[in-house]
Amino acid sequence: MQGACFGGGVDLAVACDIRVCADDTKFCVKEVDLAIVADIGTLQRLPLLVGHGIALEWALTARVVDAEEALAAGLVTKVVPSQELLAVATELAQNIAQKSPLATQGTKTAALHSRDHSVEDGLVFVAHLNSARLQSADLDEAMAAKFGNRKPTYAKL
Image (cartoon, rainbow, N blue to C red; front, side, top):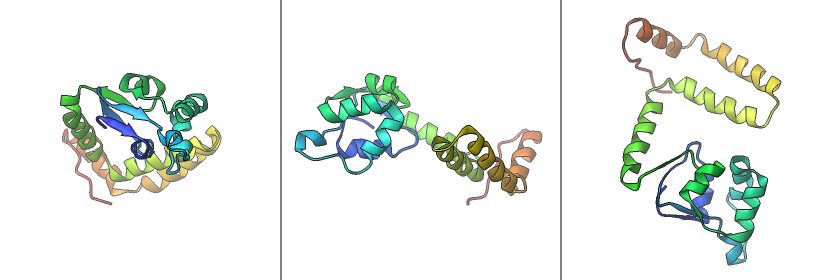
């Protein structure tokens, strides 16, 4: 993200798993100033990222929040100089894209499940996920690449 991330921009941002922004980014849950309620996910997702009190303060005041405050609160995962934003985001995406698609999909699924369930439930859930993946071609490829001192090449899902 870069520049103004207001209203619907925050709705989109909080729907993302990883949020990288430029150091000049400003955030604002603007809807209260427009006499409406944020309605596309901000009020449901923002409290999970920054906590209920901070989310409510931002939503009720429509205060503009800078990148550093957003980072400190947990809204963004990284702040970078604006001229480096595209390179950093591209490198991050490429890094993730090189991983096993089954493992990345499973990691996201398990993390979302664990957010809404107990630790015990989460452990059982991930055990089931992994039991199905133990016979995958991705696991074979990961081990072959490791022992062959090469980068793995995974099939698409």
